Length: 188
Ligand code: GRF
Image: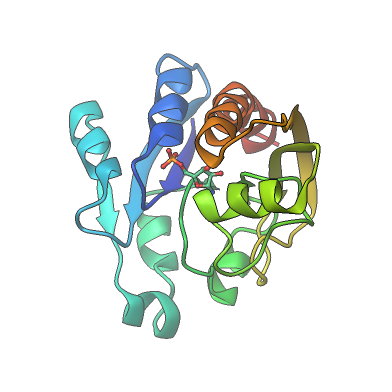
């Protein structure tokens, strides 16, 4: 079995969707949910789904071993970021070369970087007048939203688009494509 850890700090709709997709998968299992937020919605999902959780602390993440030891103990082979906002320390990147991916709710390299998350992304896209937006799935490196882009899918930004309607379009693209891309890459 290839064991995946999902790093997430938000409501966790992608986490739920990924768990659902791999529920009866013969080769891939969700082995751990990692969060830095003790109150994150994703913890409720983990509890309901019986997936173990790891709540991480700044000091240990950035100035300790970046939890590489714990991830090894949990026998994690592949890391999926889904709404995780901390920068990934070099030590963790080095421990999972080409084995850690992120999803971003825009067409990178546009609208990425520190502070570009959630509605801020959609507001910026609409304000710029772009006629399309989309999702990007990329390998994680030591810059925010910067690693090699693996997959993109786009949607139209209509005249009357609001951040909320765009967020919905983006979320359905994420749910449609993220598990499929994970499935392709996790067992390489
Ligand atoms: C997604 O939009 C993803 O692109 C971004 O964070 C969001 C997570 O949403 N990186 P959810 O918590 O999975 O609903």
